[in-house]
Structures are given as C-alpha cells and as structure tokens.
Length: 465
Ligand SMILES: NC(=O)C1=CN([C@@H]2O[C@H](COP(=O)(O)OP(=O)(O)OC[C@H]3O[C@@H](n4cnc5c(N)ncnc54)[C@H](OP(=O)(O)O)[C@@H]3O)[C@@H](O)[C@H]2O)C=CC1
Ligand SMILES: O=C(CO)[C@H](O)[C@H](O)COP(=O)(O)O
Image 1 (cartoon, rainbow, N blue to C red):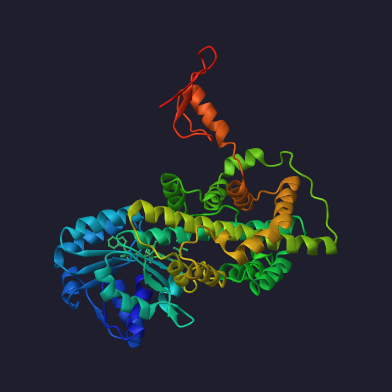
Image 2 (image 1 turned 30 degrees about the horizontal axis):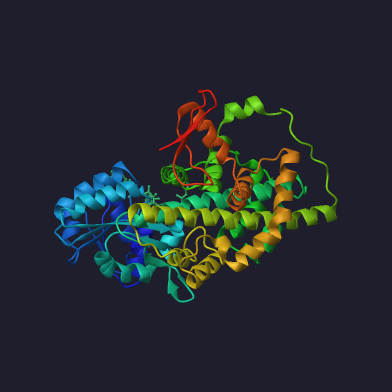
C-alpha cells in the first residue's frame, strides 16, 4: 500500500521521500519505479526526516497496533512542532484518538486517515477519509485530493472530522463492505440452491444486475469470480475454494464499537458472525446432514421469477445495511463531538473504495436535499423502492427458511426494518421482566416518571421515583 501511494504521489508531480525499515525494499522501489517521478530514498529515519520540507508531512503505512506505535515512537522524537504524521493504515479509531492526543501535547499533528481501494486503488486513485485537525487538512488536503479517485470531477477525499473521525468512518466503510459482500453471497446461494442455476449462469445474472440499481464494484467482481474456471480441475473456481471466510478484523471492530454505541448494525454483525461460523469446522462437521428444509425444483419460469424476487430482497437489504452504517456514524459523531457531513461520506465513497457504486450518488443526493435526514428510508425514492420490495423481500426470507438455506444478513436487514416500523415492540415485556427480577424500573406510556412494581408484595403495588 505504501509503495503504491508513493508512486501515486510521484506520478502527480510530488517529490516523495521513501523509507522502509528494510532498506532493500526502498532501493527496489526506486530501481523499479524511479522513472515515474521524483523519489528520494532514505535508509535511516534521520535521513528520511531531513529530506522532508517543513512543516514535515510523513505518511506511515504499516499494520495497525504495535507496528504503528513502534513507527510513531521512532519518528516523533525527530519532528518539530507543526509537523504532521499521517497514519494511512487501518488503525482502530480509539488508538488514533490516543495517539492524536499524545502527539498534540508535543505540538505534532497526528492525522488518522482511512485509505480504501486496496493496492490498485492506492496506485490509481483511492478513497481517502482524513481525520485530525482542520489546520493539518489545509496542508494535506490538496495532496490527498490530487491523488484520490475522482467522480464527476470531484475528488474522493475529504476531511471527515477531528482526531479519530477518519479512521472511524473507514472502519464503518469496512463494516458495510462485510454486510454488502455477505448479502451478495446469500443472493448467490439462493440462486444456486433454489433456482438451480450454475455459477456461470449466476455470473450472467450479476452482470445484468450490474447494469441496474445494484451496479457496483462488488457486484462486478462477483460476476468475475463466478465465471472463473479453476485451471487445475476445470471446475467452477467457486466450487474449489474452501468455504471458510477469513477476516482481518475491521468488521469485528465495527460490531464491537456498535455495541458500545448501542447502534444496531445488525447486517454487519450477521455478516461478521457468518464469516466466523463458516470457519467453525468441527461444529459444522457435527451438524452436517441434520434435518433441514425441502428443496423442490423450480421450473425455468419460476426460477426467473425467483431471480427477480432475490434482486428486490438484495436491494432492500442493501439499503437497510447502508442506512445502519450511516446511523452508526451519526451516533459516533454525537458521542465524540465530530461534525461529520454525511453527504460528503457518500460523495467520497462513490469512487476508489471497495463499496463504490452508483447507489452512493443517490445517498449523497439524499443528504444534499435534506441535511437533517434521519434515515435513508425517509427519502422518497428509497422509501418507494422499499415499499415495492415488501412482498419479494419477505418471500425470499420465507423461501430460504422453508428450504433450510441460511440468509442471516438478508433476514437481519428485514427484521431491522420491521423493528423500526413497528408501532409497539416487545421491549415493553422485557422491561417488565427486568423490573420483576431486578427492580430495574420502567417508564409508562401514560405519564412521566420512573416506576417499579413490588412484584412479591400483596396486591403488587407500584411506586414511582
Ligand atoms: N492491503 C490492502 O488492500 C489494504 C491495506 N490497508 C492497510 O494499510 C496498512 C499496510 O498494509 P499493507 O501495505 O497491505 O501491508 P504490508 O504487509 O504489505 O506492508 C507493511 C509494511 O509495514 C512495515 N512494518 C511492519 N511492522 C513494522 C514495524 N514494527 N516497524 C517498521 N515497519 C514495519 C513493513 O516493513 P517490511 O517491508 O520491512 O516488512 C512493510 O513496509 C495496514 O494498516 C493495512 O490494514 C488499508 C487498505 C487496504
Ligand atoms: O480495508 C480494506 C478495503 O478498504 C480491505 O478490503 C479490508 O481490509 C479487507 O478486510 P478483510 O480481510 O477483513 O475482509
């Protein structure tokens, strides 16, 4: 990532000093790509820092956690007040807040910055979510905006908010990425198991969907993966890959943080747990073959109808999953005092990043039209689409349950929608249970105050605080 970012800056006419703890890697970069621009190789941290113009702007791209701390501690003593350390790795936002406060006390700007798009994005134009001080953005912003992806002439880079806001929003981006990928994977599974399509046929379905409202990088690459044939066996690639999904941890961070914020990102949570469950090989071996649903064959016409039903379910679930992400960003902004422009988050995710999609432009437009939008479902077009999806969405979840096909993310999205639209929730009963066993009190619908019923006393009298 660091090498490609350096090349991207150099290709944009920025002279870049480069340093890696393994000097051979620095030399290799300059030997291989030196013709692309001006690189200044530095073997030692001191040489590197001396090569930078003041105020210094260092970008570090190393693994989150101990490696980032080690690099920060190595370079910070060599810097002067006003210098900037940009952490472009996938750091946890709480670590970024800690580092930012510690370096601020030393007069150094620490700028946690989410960079999405993988290695190709880093080279050709990533989406860049910048945290840290406004002051540092005035010097860093033009550089980031120059190397970022562009959509409709606008850069996919922005100052998201102070201290850890950039890394927080990158984390939520990855959480949404987990949810979106799981939703797509569930749609594939339904088309395979219920409609009876081959991977090649499903690739065709995804290519068609990519032309419509679901059009996105993730749908596009899904079609590519499904169409790929394993050269060693001649079998569809998807059939020879072990069905145990990995993760590096940003989805898990999103869910852990969401629990702390009481922000119900249920589609992200189900997607993260689905990856974990796929890797539970012993448990899966113990359950394999237990009774489930029935899978009657569909006729060609029924399969086509089912496919359009799945498209509706996938789309509606996607709207809910993205809405959960935006709600979580709002919850964090309130908690940490960040002023985050929600429309600008959608704007910079339209290009460069893994979840880039035409859909993001509609979210940008929704916030541009109404900055106080509480939920995407409050926007007329999204609301109409969700209304249209009602029957197919529910039918999809019902079909999956009847046939014993797990669709945890699609089901969670539907349950979330039903939770929010309900007049009354069984939370009232929960409050009664909590009051019964623990005197945890409850509020009433008919008058203000906090109440407790003395459940063990004769006549169960109620008192208020
Ligand atoms: N790969 C991707 O698609 C994406 C990655 N990221 C994030 O970018 C960051 C870098 O990822 P990536 O480029 O893939 O990782 P790599 O493993 O390719 O590179 C890691 C770099 O960190 C250096 N490093 C590791 N530990 C230390 C240390 N203790 N002290 C000094 N240098 C150290 C390595 O040096 P050496 O070469 O000597 O081992 C290497 O240069 C991570 O935070 C990652 O999460 C973000 C978006 C996408
Ligand atoms: O940061 C990213 C994109 O911006 C990567 O896609 C992400 O790290 C992949 O995560 P995982 O390995 O957990 O699926």
